[in-house]
Length: 170
Image 1 (tube, rainbow, N blue to C red):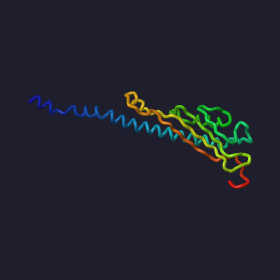
Image 2: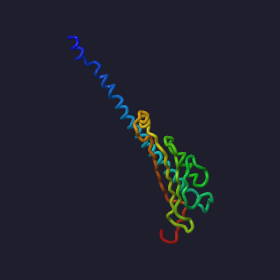
Image 3: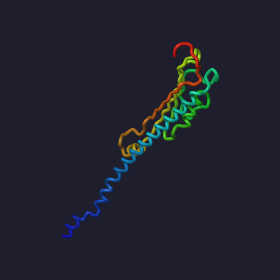
Image 4: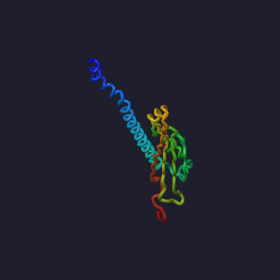
């Protein structure tokens, strides 16, 4: 009789269920939070390249400042230099989130200033590696998963220092 009462007693059932489900629930919440932080980092990176391209679109033309090339591409790791196109890189690097590692910024100027064309563009691309927190924990447990993903964002704008009147078609 005493043994039968012991088997029918369900006082500890809830605690066992909670103990089994809590790690799964926490992992699901952590994955959601980690992807949310990655999404925030991607949006922050997009905002950084937008602001950098706006700065680049109003920089002095190569006809005004010899340190700025008329056409070309520069690729620099952060923090960038403070001369020529490096100014745009530095401005982008200052705005990139700290959650990215291996940050790299590319600035491209297209079009020519002589003869003047109306389609000159400034393009800024930033990239870096985002490291997932939960995936690092899973890698410690022996699960083979990529622990990082590369975020790349770019923006382009019309170069504002170009002439208003252009001979010929655009």
